[in-house]
Image 1 (cartoon, rainbow, N blue to C red):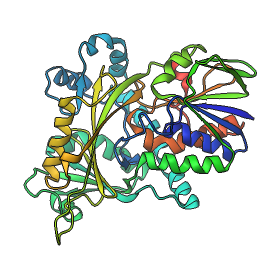
Image 2: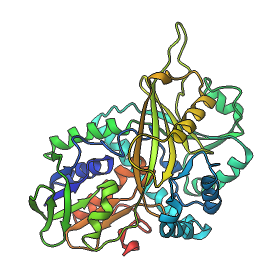
Image 3: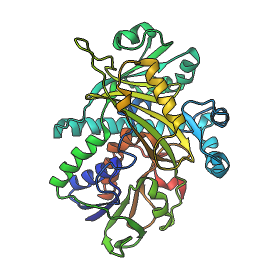
Image 4: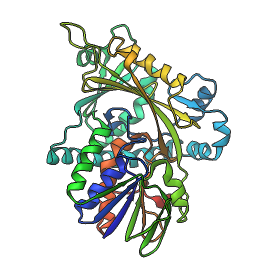
Amino acid sequence: MRVAVIGAGIVGVTTAYELALQGHAVTVLERRDSVAAEGSFAPGGIVAPAWVAPWAMPGLPARLLRALLGRSGGLRLGPGAALAQAPWLWRAWRASRPGPQDAHRLAMWRLAQFSRERLLELTRRLELDYEQEPGCLVLLRSGRDLDAARPALRLMREQGVAHELIDASRCRQLEPAMAPASPLHAAVHLPQDGVGNCRQFAHLLKAEAQKRGVQFRFQATVQAVQAGRPAQVRLVDGQTQAYEAVVVCAGAGAGALLRGVGLRLPLLAWQGSSVTAPVRHFDGQLPQVPRAALIDARYGVTLARLGDRIRVAGTATLGGASGPPSPQALRTLYAVLDDWYPSAARTQAAQHWQGASPTLPDGPPALGASGAEGVWVNAGHGEHGWALACGSACVLAEQISGRAAPLDLAGLTAERWR
């Protein structure tokens, strides 16, 4: 089957590879000049399927109020954002109530665990090296942070996810370079999660996909998709091409393309930021950097060593424009880095990045048939695209090939938005 994949971020590249494994003739259409050039360029350098969760968590109104007052380190609202996005926020609030929220979290968790196994399988079989290191610690600064983490801990216990709640002393044994003066109440140790360079993985998998015949067309911007047999893809240069299946993995651009075929996904692009800086070396001493992946639960900020660099990522800005990170976001990232590893990085040589994470109000992505003939969707992964991509791609490839999905798709399909 001739298949077009629109978008070459981490979700698009993994989708193209999985479709090629199924024997399809795949063409990837990407408006930039390389893979992983937008939201997958410099996100947090961790893969943490055990810690995925919907954006709309209990306590959402209080979080938004703190953000409006400028008191939330990890959540920010752009000018007029709360009013402009009121319908989306209303849906998110409804999804954040305890009953619905538990269902959304479980749906994301199922996909994340499947995705982890698929990522590990690809890593072993293809012998991929993307600066991966095992182990992840979720840092809980206070008892209140631990209380907020208890629903996630309960779900992990119920589903048999490997994890351990440890005290501050044990956490500092695992991470001996951590600043001793920083307040730490407890931590969650996730041995199966860890560090991983998303962009590097995307480039490696692109090369493997090309070996299987996948064609990558860069600087090819899709203007519209038309359903049918075959489905039509129209580029901005006027070209129209026909495919037996079209998969929309276009990140922030997915919503507009899908509206053209009658599917109105309420995607909202949150802006996430990162700082990547060279590791600071001292003569005769080991660098004072993390051994594993770290998540500061209070601020939603991640820290990871990627080779000879350290990356600090997080913050979410609603209504933020594309461009460099805001001064407020950078202050939060640098403050978290200084709290835990004040001597880790040469910050004067740091690179700053901001990228969009298109998110659906209830949290899980939209995966599978769009409801329009010949058009499929794999979008809305939000900040968890790196953790969910391999599983999403495998599921979609099986469906397009006419096979049963390899996991329960309740709460994950695009049908819930039709």
